[in-house]
Structure formats: structure tokens, C-alpha cells
Figure 1: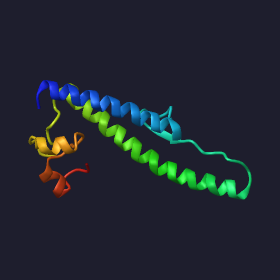
Figure 2: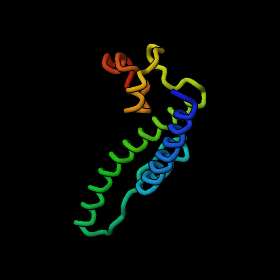
Figure 3: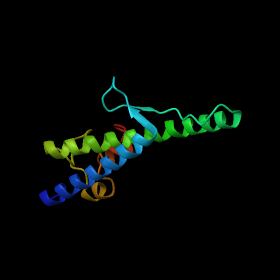
Figure 4: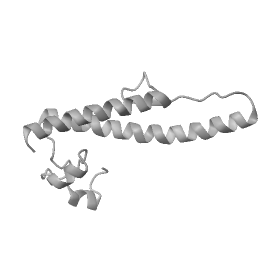
Length: 123
């Protein structure tokens, strides 16, 4: 990957990071005790039974969304750090180069396709 391509990727990742943080802020707050962790906000719609049921449903949905958004954010932060360190594109399991085609499809890929298929490390 060229220097310009890496710069473009980094800028794209920054935009995605900003978007994910905005989405997380709508449903969660940053956990002051753990850096990079979020706590889901408990919705409060009222005291009626139907409102309580809606709160429970939305809370469950928000927990799932928070986990997914937080995982994506962490992948992006990790990828940005690799770009800064010059280690982007190296498999975390076997240290081989990750195929450019794989990185194009999944820029946050941490494993080469062989290691990803064998389950060497979760990705």
C-alpha cells in the first residue's frame, strides 16, 4: 500500500471513528473507570406497564448495539495505531503480509486469510 493510500485509509478510519462515537453517545456513556468502555443509558419512558416493556426492549437492543459499535470502534483504533507504527497489513498470528485484496475489502483485518480460516486468533 502506498503512502497516499495509507493516508486516505487513515482519514477514512477517522471519519468512521467519529461516526461510531456519535452513535455510541446516543445510546451509551463512556465508562469513567475503564478507558474505551461504554455503559448503555437506561431509557426512561414512564411508569406505565407498556412504557416499562418498551424500556426493557430498547435496553436489550441498545446493549447489543453498544457491543457491536464498541467492537467496531476498537478495531478502528487498533488499525489506526498499526498505521502509525508502520505495522499495518501484517498478520497478528503468523506475521505474514495480509493480501491487499483482503485489506481492501476489510481494512481492519488483523489476520491473513489462512489464519482467519484456521481460527488462529479472533478477528
